[in-house]
Image 1 (spheres, rainbow, N blue to C red):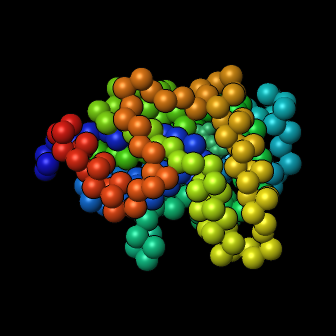
Image 2: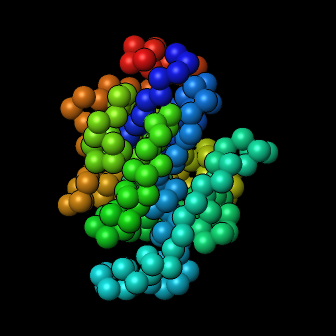
Length: 226
Ligand code: DC
């Protein structure tokens, strides 16, 4: 498995555990993990903080010129974290305030062009695992291994709720469910790069598969590609 490096893309619905699998794969293979959703979340945070009217194309284009996105590896958390104009925003971008708007922002053509260009540059040297919605279809259509993740709605809501509840005990299951359904709808119905399963992607439904089980399956697929 050692020398040849490939590109692994993981796309799928919200809260399917894409990032969990992507991080584990990257760690096992000594690859770089990139959370493309974090980039859309950071852009959304910038728009919200700076009152950017994202229905106005000119405002969007001008705002994007002021946005610098970077991932920096954090030794303590053992993961790469999102920085927006030099500020670590890894945690704030997970807030529901951002989650409520991110699908709208991610549907904007100019925003996607801005993010995709940077994502493609990150994959130049291969040895990368990137998760998102359009990674296997648009960002890296020639990736060697494409995984499309899915899970039952109830399972996904429960997982997201647990995650968010730890940070905000006031959150309700209903709020989480509504947000998830709204994001899935917008992500899969938008005009630009909607969430689609690439024709050459392997489908992984993890509703009833443990984290260890799915990692084992994915490592098996990697082995086949190497
Ligand atoms: O994966 P996530 O939930 O952090 O993604 C946040 C939002 O960004 C989600 O609504 C979909 C969008 N997104 C996207 O449109 N394209 C990607 N490659 C990654 C995320």
